[in-house]
Length: 540
Image (cartoon, rainbow, N blue to C red; front, side):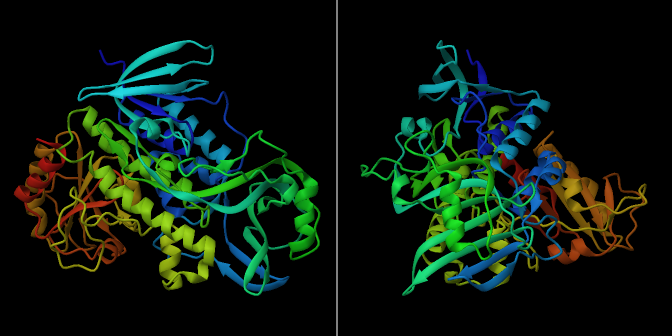
C-alpha cells in the first residue's frame, strides 16, 4: 500500500520548489531534511530573472520582491585600480531583473509557500536507504527521536545536496574534481561609500596570475555583504581525498573558522577604499568542486540540484539551475502520479535538464579559471544567458517540430512575456505572464483578421478533449479584430507586443507548457495536429 505519492529528500531551495509545485498540483508529498532547522547562512545569494519568473508562476514573487534587493552590476578592481563597471541591464521585454536574496530567506519564503499549500517539512528526519521496483519506492527513514520508519512512495526525488544519499543509492557516477583553491566566506557590514547594489571584485595580479582575491556580494541591510576570499594558511582545511570523494561546500564545525580579523586583513589589502568590517553574522571555509551525474534518474527515483551537478559559484548559476531542475520535473511527476503522462515524459527530465547542467558546469569552470572576459558571446547574449533566459529544450522528444516560419521563439524555447493585453471588461492592460500564472498547458490562438476566430472554438475543443482538465485556451486578437461569436476567453493585443515578441501569424496555435516553455506551434491551427501532440504528451 502506497503511503505517499512523492518523497522529497532535502528542504533546500530545490526540494522546496519541487514540493511546493507538487502540492499546488494536488499531489501528496512528504519533505524530509536531516537538519533540525534552516541554516542561517547566506550561501547562494544571486537570484536570476528566470527564477523570479518561476516564482511568479508559483505565486510567491511578491514576497521575493519585498525581501530581495536589486543587483545592479559589478565593480572590477585589479591591483587597486578600477578596471570596469559592468551594469546588469536587460531588454524591456524581460519582466524581472537580477536580485540578491540570502539563501536562508529564499528557503523561508519557499517553506512558507509550501505550508500555505498544505505541506510541511519534517526536520531531523533522514533517509537511510531505499530500494525500488516497477511499482513503488521503499524508503527507510530515521526521525529526530531516533525511531525508524519504512515508507512506500510512488516516486523519490533526491534534492539532498553534494553528498546525496539518493545519488549514491542509485549508483550514479559523479565525475569531476575539486579545485585547488580554498575560500573563506563571511557575512559582514562595511562602512565604505561604494555604489549600493553593486558586487565588488578586487584582485591582486602578478605576471598574469591572481594571487589574492576579494568578492563582495550585497545583501539586504545597510551595506551588508557576503564576502569571499582566499583562505589563509592558518585556516586551511584542505586534505588529500580519494577520487570519488566529493569535497564541496561549507566546512561546518570542522577546523578553525574565520574571524572578523581574518576578513579585515583581506579588506586592508584589497578593498578599493579604506573600510572597516563589523557585525560578523557568520563565517566558514568553503571548498569548490565541479561534478555531474551520468543521468538524472533511474526508474522511479530522480536527483536535482547539487545532488546532480556542482560547480564554481561564478555567475550565481547553481541554486537557480537547481530550481529549474525541480520546476521542470514537478509538473511531469504530477502528470505521472495522475496517470496522465505519455511514454517518455518522465524520461524527458534527463533529456532536457542534463545538457543544461553540463553546460553550466563547463561555463562556470571556464569563468572561474579565466574570468567572464573569456566568454566568446557578445555582451547582450552573455547577459541573457547569465540570467538563464536562454535555457531551452529544442529537439526534446516532448516538444513539437519547428515547422512554422516566424521570428519568435520555437518549440522548446522560453515563452517570453509581453504587455498591453486587454480584456473587454477591464480598463487596464495585463501581461501575458498574468494569463499563464498558475496554469497547466495554455493554448494561445492568434487572429489578425475577423475570419480566423470562427474556427478557434472547434480547435480548442479538440485540444481539450485530448487533455481534459490539463489545458486552458485563450484567443489573442490583433487590436482591431472583433470576434462577437467566440466562446473562448479572449484578449486584445493592444500594443501589438504579442505579435511582435512571438512572430505570431494569423490563425496560429501556440501551446505553452506548465513550466513556461513552448511545446508546439502550428500554422494554421488544426484540431487533429493538436490532438496528436497532446495525446503523445498525456498518454491518452
